[in-house]
Length: 205
Length: 205
Image 1 (spheres, rainbow over the protein chains, first blue to last red):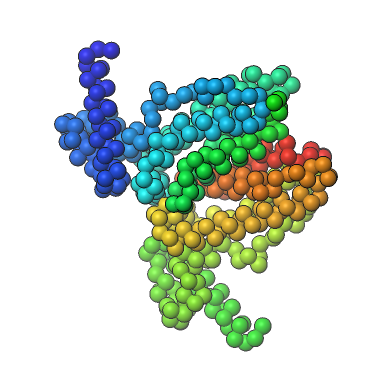
Image 2 (image 1 turned 45 degrees about the vertical axis):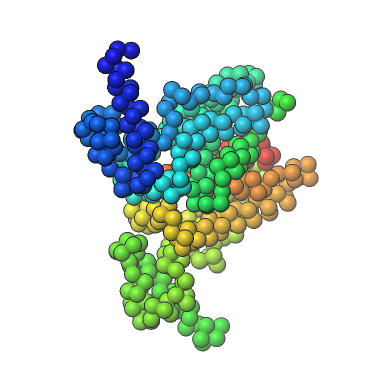
């Protein structure tokens, strides 16, 4: 990495840290990109070279960078519905944890913009959705290869749709209900994934 | 029905019609319950005897009354995953159609309030969610009874969770994407339900 690239990486890291503080302190709408830029000692226009929109800055600040995400869980799951479900839930966890650990009101504020029909926020969240779908899709495709030949009709695309849909729904309910904890949400999802996958994955325990 | 009850029913019907116009014309936030009451010639306080909150008035205006909902689809589905899935999708359709036929911006505005952390709107939507879950739950419980004895371990509660979760997610995506039609959404859900149910329901075609 050249000195120039290194300096850019440093600026990015400092921008993300400043953004996390600003959003946590002031909420999404009230936090200003100009203040985030000022805290790091750069112009607002320079900030937009790093993050084209406030929504992208928010998501980048809240979510782990793609490089830190495990593509598939470290320990290979068993070839049974429960093992696949646990592995899929672990991927959901790795992708969602950063966001889910923020204060719920901040997460709700951001999600409400999604419904506010604001194209930039929608694009940001769609990219986030797609990222999760890519990870889950890659996982199922890989697991499918390891199945016995007669089971390779497994529909990885439909399994991905179901897992991502259930995740979106569970996350919405988690956001609405202040009493629901993140581990509870994950545990419920794992049970649902197992229900969805049984009948498609051999029970090879 | 007494004359008094009849008159109350009439007032309710007129309130719902006035509410539908007001919400469609002005949006959720800008529509006023006082104007709806005035259009029907009653006091605002009287309106709240019929519908305790604006959110409940909105949902009542947008959704078919429970009495008009088919509890289970008219034609009994086959005892196979595709039949069950089609029947579950028909129940979703019956419950959601009134809302889904409104202009998407109005639906989005209402859903964004859900994320706005406003307890009354959340309570209204939770009641709506519960209504769908009750219908789907009753359907699965009934179908389960008709299964051969060895298959009566079918987990109707978990199937209901999955169907309702996938519906919430598909509806969110439908709202976000102006290009997505309601029939497309239903069709996708039917395919997902079939994927979820196979392995739990015998393929008895």
